[in-house]
Length: 397
Ligand code: ADP
Image (tube, rainbow, N blue to C red; front, side, top):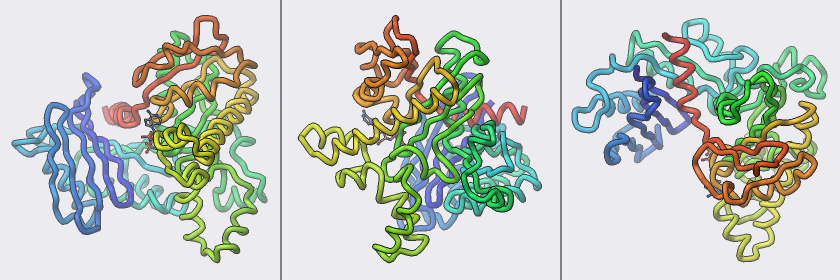
């Protein structure tokens, strides 16, 4: 069974075709600059070279049309006909209060997806466009929507209601939702396997550390706390996002810089985080290099990043009344042994001790704690596309 996974951004589209018998990737690609001059599709087969196709790509329907053509191309295609694709799984950013799990798309679901747009104004319209394009171009093939917010829907009310008048939650659905849910869900399913222990008895803290970063507390396989909020701006210090700040800063900066609503949104999402603090880069490899050369602000940004994570971990240990394992995943979590070591350096209270040799290993599922560590420390490479494909198979089979 072959599943196509689609992740639509406002001007880009990523896709993977996955063989679900082997769980192996067959083909993947990226359409960039949708709706702009110089749009391009880069398509690659796991067995072959990249195929770069430039074309006029005015919208997501055109982009998906081009992807489907590439997938059945006699030279660099991956299937003989589109009927071989059993179903399509779509990443959808915001499911608001309406979706607590993945769903097969039908008319009622489409209506609800449109109603979620105000909470995900930047991403949800593109996600919807992707689904509609597939409905048009692959009639009869089921589409499944997989939500970034779904995994954290199991949080208790005292964790997701904000300290605002309650009507804002009731009328406007302003609450903590959490994001990166597909990644956190995947890791929460892998961790018990790596640990060789039953899910039900485990308290796990998952650190998804990439350009965007978030942490969840998972008790018995269910998310009970997460660091992102109504939007993916909250929580940890990120590449370009500010994470937790005093909310009064927002109006203060708007006044100082004479910014409107869209501009302050752009500022907090794109100009802050480790980029803003360091003035060097949002990329942690650049930051590490600059810090090594004695750049104070790069080192400060790294110290802040680590410190926020340590504080969150401490608070999630409190939220779960204990922790069995802490998992690192995503670009930084999977690759940076120095950041993992820095985070774990202040965990004597948990009886954590790292195995320095194991901590050097990258890109594989591994327990990097030493044998006598009371809390296990895992590295598990995330696989959001596979998680989307697994949900898609489960719902459409
Ligand atoms: P996203 O999916 O949110 O775009 P990723 O999960 O791909 O992000 O993570 C990207 C981040 O991972 C970048 O900041 C990059 O610098 C960081 N990263 C990748 N490899 C390393 C490494 N070896 N050391 C430190 N950071 C790394």
